[in-house]
Length: 131
Image (cartoon, rainbow, N blue to C red):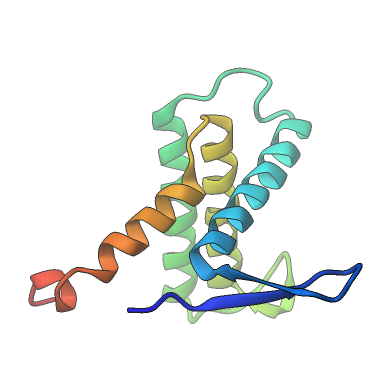
């Protein structure tokens, strides 16, 4: 499978540079992790060390809230309004928590996602399983 590319024009000269999709993804995830972690730290969530179990439980709580929203018909988000559903809001919370935690713990999420994506590209259909 050939990797899709993204062409980005230079804001100064207009010349386009071509980047592999996975390279851009890793950079975007690194930048998003910095932003999410910075905000969480500013709000006091990293005043003390966080433990792994607590962070995993917080991820799980966001997934549970998304499931609960779906069980109740996936209504409009109470916090974000009618533009987004409750499931969208909770999955966004999950992503923000994951990005924050990975930066706070020094993990290389962007690089790991790209490596896993590339690994999965070479796997069998349904990864060799029935479902």
